Image 1 (tube, rainbow, N blue to C red):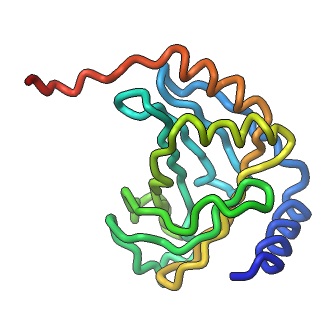
Image 2: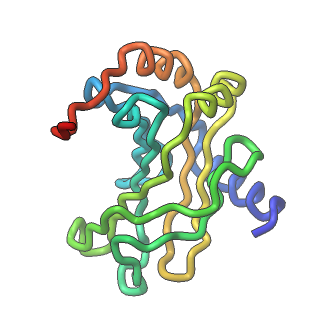
Length: 172
């Protein structure tokens, strides 16, 4: 998908939805979340990695046409995940599929990968920008989404300074 098409779709999303106001909230002591513009499945999650070396990014997505959904857990989806107009990621792994969430649509739980703390600098440099995702996968019609950066950089500083390595029960 070319950049012009991505920007056109993004502008249409904003035009249809009005202003996007992602507020980053703590869902737990380790998870930051923001709601996007897609109804029902628009949550973006950020967690520290298990050893506090960076962040994990995950998102929920809505498959609008349940009948055409061919996605299963473990699949990789083609997409354009962008910070403003810069491409960040073009594939995400499906962690889970909720086929029975609603009779009209399915919900996907997606892994956007683990990122070093240096990646967080891009959020700090772009507080007035947004994260966008446009799915371009032939296995399903997935709603696009966006989340405003806003206060994310301050929240990520807090996450990093408060991060404690998870005890994974592994002994040496």
